[in-house]
Length: 282
Ligand code: NDP
Image (cartoon, rainbow, N blue to C red; front, side, top):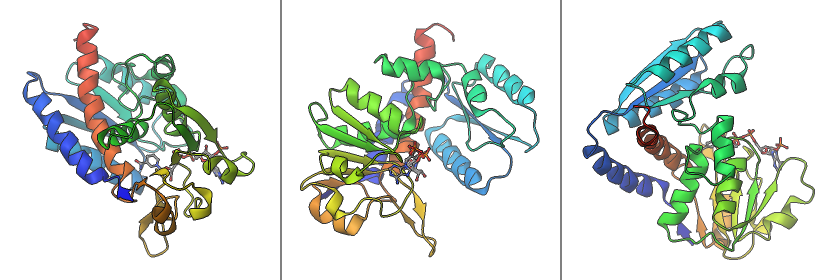
């Protein structure tokens, strides 16, 4: 069994990105909108800020009060869409319930949508056009490519169908000629499907959902889940100890997909600048 080491790959990929940035004349800019006081969101925003600082990006963190109106959020996004110093905009989720997250995400110009969550970018991905793709699924593809794991012709089973992970990953895998099965909470006999997988991706948020009996010999296991145990430690959705004995490759949690997600945000922000230049919007 070989570990798919997100930390190592992130480090190398960030170095390659820095080399591209050195050749770029203008500074790259990222704006993160945080609404309310969710403590987990503050941790994620700090991670993004650190990544942006490490890459020398201009970073704008805009904190809005819990009771902000939808109109105020939309008008802020309109301003950022017009702001030439800003290449990427993201709204840190979750946001307060009185706000329509789909409407807010879709207000971001698709060329600045570094989370890849606008309907335009989701459609462009399905149509296999070069566009901004959600960071976690993109990170999974980068990780597999780094380890020379061919996707074409493989049976890929994805557990979880969120707009953030499962669905865009299914599109990326299909675009690269994999045969894709998507499972979710209504799937009957989950194990029947997971056992068929050459590549099994689990993005659910339930520790120990996948055990040794649920995977085939030599399978490649990508564990996206992040679960906090009672002792405060993090674990994924896959029982790492038993499954790693059977797998050919497996991602650890932490130190796997999460690391790649951070890198992909940096890369998407750079890519957003390049795409906008190509579309002569700069
Ligand atoms: P969502 O809650 O949006 O989606 C979870 C998916 O899992 C849904 O499609 C749901 O099905 C499915 N599901 C729930 N229970 C079962 C079950 N018993 N069997 C099969 N499928 C089930 O979560 P996200 O996609 O946003 O995130 C998934 C996990 O990945 C979380 O732990 C999250 O923290 C983590 N994550 C990690 C990231 C990283 O960088 N490593 C980034 C993003 C997320 P249904 O659609 O029917 O409800």
